[in-house]
Length: 268
Length: 291
Image (cartoon, helix red, strand yellow):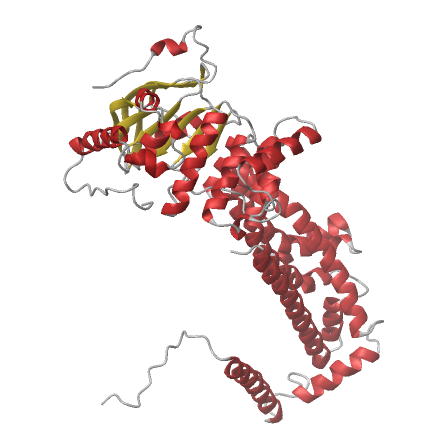
């Protein structure tokens, strides 16, 4: 009776070909709706440029400088600031998180304060970043830092707190100092959590970029966006948005590869 | 009847260098606001260089005893002293071998064995020599750069024992060290441990739920009962082992075939059963698998 009726498990993993076809279909649908909306004439082209116009603008930006630089140069200068802010966040956040996970007093001092401050969006720091660190490299880096810092701290902290107690007990009975406990037990056990945190951190840091570059005078992808807006060139703004999306996606893929390699190296 | 062994061990005489003394030790746990006793008034002494095993059903507090000697837990009443000093914290003078090995998975065999040594201020050369000796003793040559997950359970436990022995600790605390091993490996490890204990005697507190293992390895067996954990009796094995010359056998099954062995084993089973309700399932073999 129920013959021929196949029950599909909606949570079962898809074969690769099927997954790829569906992914491509998603993108095609997105561009189709965009194109139809633009072609319908309901919105003037300044408000909603067609996909074709944006693509042309994107290509043009890669060889014709806009506000002083090509798209690649803007991206490179943004990426430099991002790398600095993200690197600082990791360099300070990971050790801090691990120490918070080991020293209860530090945990008590920092965690509640940190939990309150981390809900302040990075962009809210922009005025202070400009006042304290200037509009050169310091201000934007601080804004990126404020976005990238919390996930570094939180994941290192959680990784340290959820170390299997038997490893801590073994290290204690073997006479490990606090320093060795943190560097040789907490850090290696927390690596998967830390790497997952770095991915979130990179994403948030890169997102904060536009906010950061609102206060930069001369270059960067956020600056390109702001100037495109000032020129009422929506196709430039959209090109910038696409570039931000693509680079963010590339950063995430790179970190995902690192994560996979580390997890594989650690065996089980 | 609670046999309190030799309280004089705490005195100046008789060199209590590394005796473990439980003096009227009780331990309570809190659960949902009510406290319930895990250990009640436990007193016994592990003499210097004596091998004492604690047997008892799950939940009788035997592991709690070991953890208190290690400094990983503390009594609610009474005192635990090791080498005439009250235990206040874990330390490398009391090496622990855990049931689940607790090797650091991100460190090689060599690095695992080296971990405790590095806490001591030893010259590089002395450390190397000691590691080499421990590696040889446990038959781990050629595995120095392997990671724990690449080794079998038996090999992992060898590493864990080497990691403890390399510190030349006064006291060795072993918490069901063979509980996670298969039956054959377990027998081999028992045979090696008893040889090791003869060549290189330490004060050993050994926790197990396997009666035969306890009788085979220990000089004395502390039999515990549960709810709350109490000492039911302390059974002397050493005089029987000496009188019957168990040491002439290489293999554990030969020892376990001896009438004297069977007699002791049966006596301990009776002690355990006397307390346990019939629900307590009893396996007749080497203690069965790890629960």
